[in-house]
Amino acid sequence: MVWNFSTEPEFQEKLDWMREFVAAEIEPMDLVFRDPGAPFDPRSPARKVMRPLQQIVQAKGLWACHLGPELGGQGYGQLHLGLMNEILGRSRFAPTVFGTQAPDTGNAEILARFGTDAQKARYLKPLLDGEIVSCFSMTEPQAGADPGEFTCAARIEGGNFVINGEKWFASHADMAEFLIVMCITDPDVAVHEGSTTIIVPRDTPGLNIIRNTAVGPKDVIGSGVHGYLRFEDCRVPLENALGVIGEGFKVAQSRLGGGRIHHAMRTVGMLNKAFDMMCERAVSRVTKGERLADKQMVQERIADSYTQITQFRLHVLYAAWLLDEDKAYTRRVRREISAVKAAMPGVLKDVVYRALHIHGSLGMSNETPLMDMWQYVPEMGIVDGPTEVHKVGVAKDVLRNVAPSPDVFPTYFVPTRRAEAEKKFAQYLGQEPAA
Ligand SMILES: Cc1cc2nc3c(=O)[nH]c(=O)nc-3n(C[C@H](O)[C@H](O)[C@H](O)COP(=O)(O)OP(=O)(O)OC[C@H]3O[C@@H](n4cnc5c(N)ncnc54)[C@H](O)[C@@H]3O)c2cc1C
Image (cartoon, rainbow, N blue to C red; front, side, top):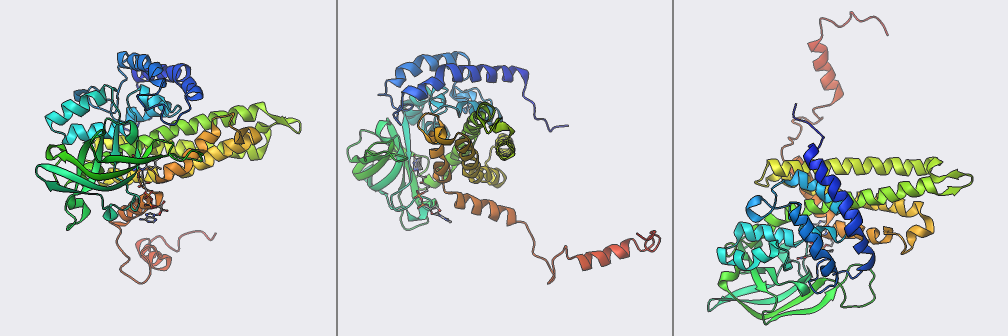
């Protein structure tokens, strides 16, 4: 029997250690280092707190677990990573402390897969060691979900790429050592044949940050960690192409699957955290002579939340298991990852809203983590592609092998099926006692 929902005792021990470590050492950082860039920015004072914690994680053999052993990771695979990320998702700082912070994770993977030896030595090694931060820049102000609308272009001139155009919402561009930028290198063919991913060191002349953009209702325009970039005759040598010139789309696609499922895994952690708060409040608050937990409508919210979290979690772990089984990232895996990606904002919205609501005014306030979580609801529906695009992908894949009915009536049309069944069981019919 292969189906099994249990965790090996040795790995469970690691998870138990992680749970305590994250709660005691990392979650408190969320309370004091409030700057949105603090978990990632090498200039943040939080770095001084994180460094020794990262060393503890490395000594425990739990550093960069998304990577195989050849890259300094543990090679646990996506299913184990899923269980780990459920714990890391409880804190903004935990992924950085454990070396699994996006977009560095995906960037490390594509550098490992497509990078030259020189690129790996210069960028991959310090990235894996947690010494530098990176950025992946694809979205443009006029085009996000549809790469066919991209216009930021790199022309080839005298052994260089000369990049011109704008990019939008490039996370961590400001603090990154280098950016991986998707550029159109042949405008006469479709984007999946005419784009190239190019490594651009952050200090390259012509790479200008117009301003940073923040998620959420921050008053200060220009704050935040997502860069609005303008490339103005920005020159980098042709050796900076990551992968084959013209095949940038393939490079970009290969990093997105992992990124999406890692978001979903961490979302399970956030859901559990909101659920824990909801439950504690329900058994603590008394109104009209009984606990909230004793009121049926509150019980319904708890039961619905429990069910949705469990369903979502199992779907995420199933997709992670498939990814381990099917490393070629085939359609079968992509369908499941898109399905959990599309489900993620809905589950998060339902559970966080219920948790907020059960807390009343306290839930609305800045004195619980719930309003911070609320901000992630729309974010999870947009980041790495809008929900609609993923749903379309799932539906197309589901329908790919479904044949239309050969008749005007469907194949499950009861009169036809019953006639067939009557013929099949003719010798027995008429022997039934009257109902
Ligand atoms: C927190 C955060 C971090 C990000 N970090 C990065 C980063 O580091 N690098 C980077 O390159 N990008 C990044 N992005 C950008 C992200 O990839 C894009 O926001 C995303 O691809 C959607 O593009 P868009 O914002 O232009 O929305 P649009 O493409 O304009 O879509 C807007 C809306 O239009 C509708 N829509 C779009 N397409 C379809 C469709 N095919 N069918 C039906 N409806 C549709 C949907 O309702 C969708 O939400 C980040 C975004 C966020 C929120």
